[in-house]
Length: 300
Image (cartoon, rainbow, N blue to C red; front, side, top):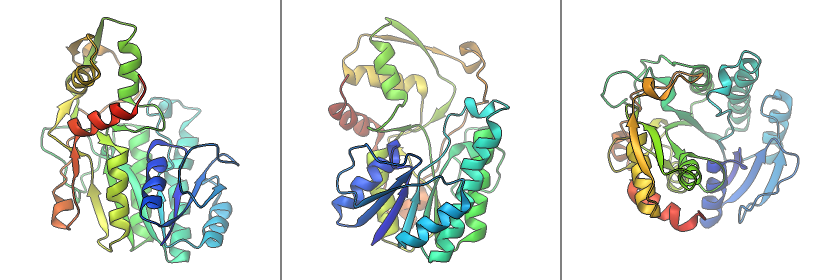
């Protein structure tokens, strides 16, 4: 199997390529940069590609002729997406770029995995969102553009996996864990939001699941975060410092008390993952175990 992975310079794309290499599959990475300067092991090729350029996407995918495309590339700076001078670019990347990938996959008869987000929902209530729930109501520009990307994929393709994730952390890039470790060294006490509830997703574990999906034809919508129960960002921070051996004190505060951000955040990011088991996929390990393994590999 030959797989093209977009966004290979990011947290997830990096781990997907490494997982493909472990299983002996041919992988071609792509990102906006013209040359690759990362450390993915086993990647068999790299191609610079601007996903907003429809002709370039069509040419790259036609030339590579992959069996599947894992589309990890995205605009993920949620607050910056609210800036009036950036909204058009965010849409060009998350929506139009995804549409370009889907159309090229159709022409190549390739499977596609599209990585989406809990932000497609309105974040209200306390019931976990079902994978096939269609009650979309994004609260911000990022969520809306990712939803529109979902809709493009599902309208264009039949052989697709739309996988929603949340609270991502991985080796290759910035994330909440690294931020907590960095500022936990500088301050004795931190304030962390306690009324936004969800579950972390370790990209190393997610990459394994995504390749499992590629090896199947069980297409459709899925939710994939680590197991271990639903928590708040406050709970996550407390566990990070506990496992890292920090004495940093964490104070729980509400979103309102913490202060207004540019983008509205969902309070309820609980994702129901039962569809994974129903379709024979192995769930991700607990987030506590994932954090332990992550910290063992991370310098802090």
